[in-house]
Amino acid sequence: MKAMFAIAIALLLSACAPYTQGTETIFISIAASYGKDGEANYLENPPGDQRALSEQLSYIASRKGIPYREYLFLETDGRMSISGDGRPWGRKDILTLLETLETNEQDLIIFHYAGHGDQNGSFVMPDGTRLNPDDLLYRLRQIPGMKCAFIDSCYSGRFIANDATLMNGELFNDGQLVSETFANMLIPSLKLFFTISEPSYWNTWILTAAATDQLSYDSWDEGYDRQDEFGAFTYYLLKALGYRMDTGTPALPDGRITFYTIYDRIKQTMSETLWKRATPQATLTPVDLVLFD
Image 1 (spheres, rainbow, N blue to C red):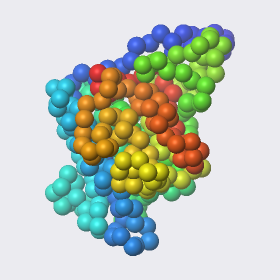
Image 2 (cartoon, rainbow, N blue to C red):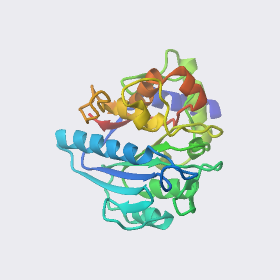
Image 3 (cartoon, rainbow, N blue to C red):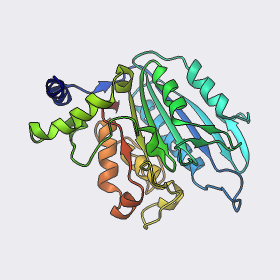
């Protein structure tokens, strides 16, 4: 019986069309520098990561005529704000936003975090409180719409440790999960069958900067344009979304942007040295998510 389920899922993986959002794009971002330069936990680049992602996503949405709104939780140089209004914030404020966010089933919600993560994968808030993966994912999955999370922190692979995750053997064609042979599809299909039991899991796509036992890096400079100005993972994420690193400006991406094409572009452009030290992890779902067509 289980073999029949595996075959059915394999067929589903090769046949489903990508989900496409058609109404509003909502960007929720948390970025923290943890005080001022020279202090023990200071991170230089999360504020710049948030700013560039905000610029890029809002630019694409505007050019494509898609309504856009954003909620930016920022801490830089010891000062905190929510979308620039100077309000202090913490774990409770983030959870409250997720619980009260007004969306519909066709909205695209993009969640981003750049900051410290502890060995359990939890976000470390500037005030020292923690936001653990289970609490965040539960609330994300309750939000109507399609959710995509980009997490740039140490041990962030724990956000998908209990899901089916990508392995090196999967292949993609224009963002669609495919396989050269039927046999090769059985491994990911079995992973889906044994690890995913709720349909809500198939409405949430997560891409992390590192595996469960790896660190992420505040910067990683190999001489590329502006590479030292961004988190090591977010630098490649921005490039995959079409951001112009040579000029430091937003731009329309080439072709359709989907969750798995983002993963592919990061994998193809990231240096082998960085990939081995901080290996991006992505959830495996039966269908892809189109962020921008």
